[in-house]
Amino acid sequence: MTATQSPTTPEVFRRAVDGLSSVMTRAEITLGPIRPPQQLAPHTYALGAEVTSAEDVDAFGRLILLHDPDGHEAWDGTLRLVAYVQAEVDEALAEDALLPEVAWSWLVDSLAESGAATTAVGGTVTATSSIRFGDIAGPRRTHQVELRASWTVAGSGTAEDGQDGADDLAAHAVAFCTLLAQAAGLAPAGVSELNDRRG
Image 1 (tube, rainbow, N blue to C red):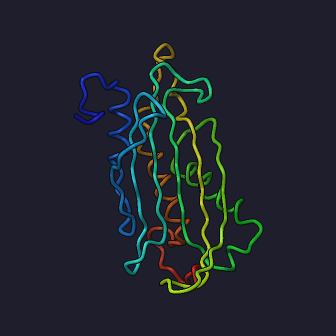
Image 2 (cartoon, one colour):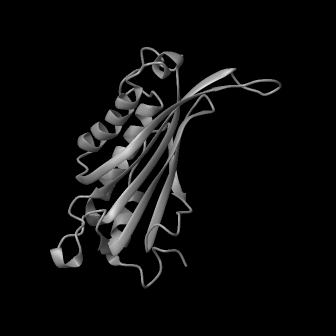
């Protein structure tokens, strides 16, 4: 029996999962449920995502929903989302000292544009470079950007507050997919790509 099928699963969590699962993605993004971590909260759910073009994975990520019916002081609510995104970037972008700030703006702007109301947003951005040696397939030098972030769904107070925020989760999933598309260097939906920033 899955978490969302269990008779003991809170109705708030069920609606939150339904919201996350209702999102339609653009063709380049594959999105689906994956096994969630079990120790982070009493109730958890996770989505895995990949951005592919020309049969290559350009970016991938995870979006994890955490729910604690009793609330969590550090969250400032009962519903929290944890996002992880990793993407390859071209050398010029990798060498830009502002890359971490740019990558963080992808998240902040995606949340704002989707209408996802948040509180207690925090995270890290890491840029790395790798060089292949010896008999190993692939380009000799690659560059990646990795973003880890978490935020609380605004309005997801405890039952005493009379609010739960569960009906707004679709907007958060849209923001995650937009973030993933930006990290992968996809043109905005409906816009023809004039050049490829990935090189």
